Image (cartoon, rainbow, N blue to C red; front, top):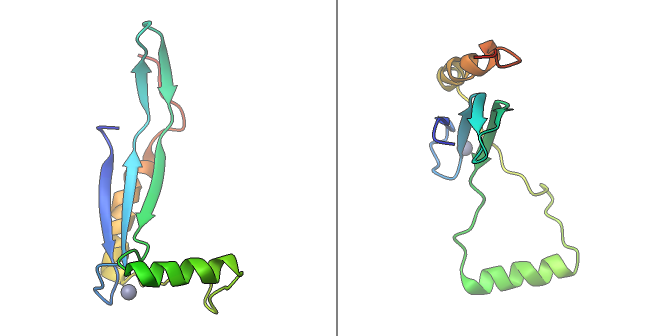
Length: 107
Ligand SMILES: [Zn+2]
């Protein structure tokens, strides 16, 4: 987990809530406590901020609405707009992952 590389994509609206955190954990050979070696495959995942800074009463109101099956007209999604300059940075970030061999070569 220490080798995880991170990239942050910022929405063109510059809202702090519209930030995507990309994570790339390259494949690695791991040695267990018993001395066995095994391959850990590479992974890429992203994290995004979900609105959380609402008052207690607003959260209670949302809970009541949820219990009664209320659904937002927009679904439970928000948007993120990736400008071309940010897309280029993301492509450069993902290039290492794409170029990584599918299997780890033996030592
Ligand atoms: Zn935005």
